[in-house]
Image (tube, rainbow over all chains, first blue to last red; front, side, top):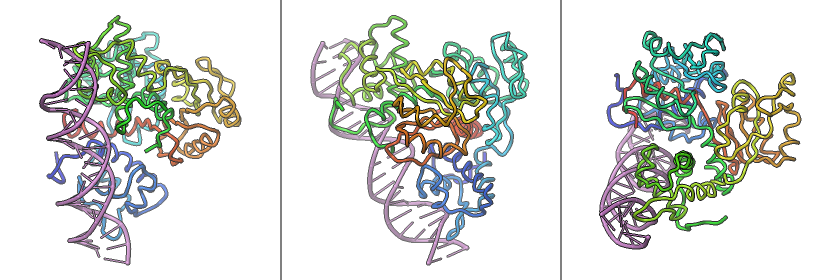
Length: 216
Length: 216
DNA sequence: ACGTGTGAACCGATTCACAGCA
DNA sequence: TGCTGTGAATCGGTTCACACGT
């Protein structure tokens, strides 16, 4: 795949920040701002100008010295880097309370991600429709994900099923999982897993609160 | 507050892992396992034995050399460290799809956290009940949070209201916010903010997927 | 003059490797 | 013997500071 710079390894965190930069840039674009400096944009972000510039420098030089960055152009560049310049279909597994809430969440479209199909093992849920998506019985999961060539899944099933179902997902071609279940998934290491763990986030907030350490 | 060790500063990430250790220990406890070694427990976690030992060593020596860690005792120690050995009431602001899903989420109780009150600015929602919690109009927010002395809030309002409402929350005594809105909050730095950003997590997953870099 | 791009310095966190203790 | 606890070594990422281009 087209490497812009060949030198070095890209910090994992730099990628996460790229999404945040993209969001900020889109916001500036809506405000009709054409050009922005690293100083300006990082006012809206939780980082410093040097970090912004360094992160972008892993992928190329997108700014103009003495001027700043063209907002529209940089949006397109970052979308190209992230791969969100095209629509990705994603699957949702587990249509419980959280799952159905995500079915109605518009925020994924920000990154061109579209929940295209959803499954639940509760047969009484199958057929119900949330936000344009019809819930399918889980027995159809493997077949449909394979047929539709979906690569990304949101996993919102109870903890005790998460490992087993994630293995099924890998079998039918899923390559990336956003895991909401409070367990660590053990999968082949070419499978990309991100974990959203609200309870443990709150756990560390309680610690910080109790110990009055200043936030960052 | 009672420092066990006095030497050094505790890595932020070590605290996050403490929550994960606690969860794993509780799981072992349910399986009637009495003693566990750092080797054993890290099989269920995304880390290595040395990390587990080092993390605990910031707070004291809880293991027995040649043996391992007493599961029940370590659970109590970590709960004491995190501060989750007592129930914390939390407030939920924004009873949209995500907010109401969280009202029904049992996982917070794992860390002794209880959603005690919920608010929404949509008056037609006020009075409705989700998972034992009655939605209150947002006009009552400041008064009630102050009266109930709540220190932690879940913020599930649309992005454009998040900054303003978070300032209101700080005014009435909130010290920690778990922010689900896709914006960076600017608050005094004794306010602890954690950000749950599902869309940007997915954004970086797409990058990793596209670039086939092996997961971790 | 101004803001980017980047090597170098720095800093914090992870991992190693082994001493210490049951 | 076996596993913990921990200084020391290492690693990766952030920040600095300035040369460079416009």
